[in-house]
Image (cartoon, rainbow, N blue to C red; front, side):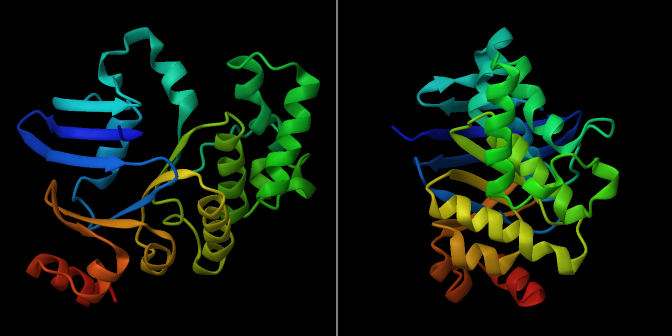
Length: 242
């Protein structure tokens, strides 16, 4: 049984069909990277996996359980499947450490001291422990995104979803965020990543999926997708990007 299974997933907004029969299996410890042009449905697919959008058809199984039927148990599922967004969504009136410890105290019921100790450990992991008492508006975009990753890690998720986590960053800030993600991959974190960073996909992914117009057009190892893509649409996309 795969850790996360997306089965025949479709999503429509009115008459607009954004996702069409998406099927993805992700094993524990696997890094799956999704690439494709803007508007291909990549982010919508992630939002469905995190139940920020409800699928129109299909099923999403987490450890064998169809999470589209959870109802009020959705928050407990999101504790296990965390998400890092394009925009950092930090609380502006809370310090960096308060941003990281807020959910563990409120949702996991951790005592304040325990939450703060663990929060500092996660900030140390992303290289942001020196900014624990700073406020988000004093940080660069890359620093804010690393805090957002620490905040997601503080819930001790089993899977992390990344929705183009570097797309809002200045080019010189991208490397620090990617370095954190690479370290998480080396540590065995299960990850589903939507990104335009082809170098990251080549280096870190176990599998790469190419989406276009709501479909999965092609998937394979990084060597197969980047070295010998089978589909004309994949080849055309990569020729333009690379």
